[in-house]
Amino acid sequence: MIRLEGITKVFPGVKSLDAVDFEATAGEIHALLGENGAGKSTLIKTMAGAYIPEAGTIHFDGAERRWTAPKEAKDAGIHIIYQELMLFPELTVAENIFIGEAPRTRFGTIDFGAMFARATDILDRLGHHLDPRALVKELSVADQQMVEIAKALVGETKLLVLDEPTAVISGREAELLFERIKRLRDEGVCIIYISHRLEEIFAIADRVTVLKDGKLVGVRTIDELDRDRLVSMMVGRDLADIFPPKKVPPADAAPVLTVRDLRAPPKVKDVSFDLYSGEVLGLAGMVGAGRSEVAHAIFGSMPRSDGAVTLGGEAFNTPTPRDAIDRGLGFLTEDRKGEGLMMLLNMAANVSAPVLPEFTSAAVLNRAAEVAAAEDEIKRFRIAIPGPTSGVDKLSGGNQQKILFGRWTRACRRVLILDEPTRGVDVGAKVEIYEIIRKLADEGVGILVISSELPEVIGLCTRVLVMREGVITGEVKDDGITEENIMRYATAAQAA
Image (cartoon, rainbow, N blue to C red; front, side, top):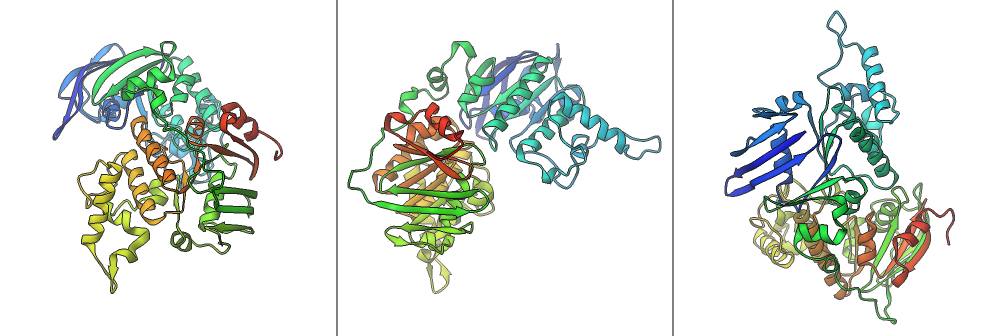
């Protein structure tokens, strides 16, 4: 369906693609992998006509093409669904599906009856039943994603590119997405799939192409690969080197955080646990189990209805985020752009935000001290950024995440809650983040890791609590930390 030969794309000072070859066929799910900066986004934008390469040729649907604009590629049958959904929340499902292409009456007005009927037909083709009259803002993220895919089916889509489609969904929602993608593949659509979640690649892909530093590393069928070989292709190191060695806290270690009978309706019904100094404790479960809500209730960013929390040996029962920070508790949320980083401010301002009094004298901010602190974090966490006064909005997910680690470890030295700490981060950056987590634990910080990636929970944690429907249904530790045991508790009907 598509063949690229010798594609080279150069930006000022950077060769993003260096003579890359790529091929994907009709009726195939082809995974495109690589670390952040490997050239994946540049390659798909070249396919879609958003970038014009300096060298190389594009063959699509049996003919050589020279796109001059994205519309030409779209009209030919190429559709890209980016990680950030491009929907209008105040419009209906049908209006979003047919944006700019709504059927018209003979008077030139929008034929809403025909539009709703055609939208229903397209959604039925995907096996996903939605009310075409529903407002998009009222839909779940998974349903919004189906609307985005449905947009691609208005015309004759021959090539569909999905960029990190499960970044904000997991569990059953992801499984349903895979079913719909496979259905399109079986209809003859060529699908290019980009994801940092390697378990998804083995679940869905037929072939894999790996890029590194703008160059082609190799192409393999999924049957030729296992996780270790794939990681080695991407980052040049074995899977065994990804997670640092685990360390169990000493037997006489004291709890640094104690939670008893915590309730925060409707998601958190009854949660109790202890977190020890120097421990990496996992909190696992399906989406909707209440894991993130537990974190917010502890930190004070969500109200509690009941329960007792002790932090550093002192009661912490009327919390606010400011109190939590002052007591040494940090919270790296799952939504780094919406709730974590201040995207319009520079790195130095992002690092100093929770501890501004340290950089203030007589209500005047000491910017030199703030910049010096940010420079320390750049060195400490090896953040790839031009400097402390540079913006954070254009950085890779891994570097944005490391800035948040710099912020919270400067502000909080007692407990750090990490909600999806490597979401949207490539394998290489994950390794660095795992090393940071291990180092913080070695320094005595108690760390609570909430993650939907079971290999991450298994590789990092010495003990794992599993939630379902607002309660902890089980605990696993040591050799008992397996995917089977975690899933058994995650689907249990009652607490163990």
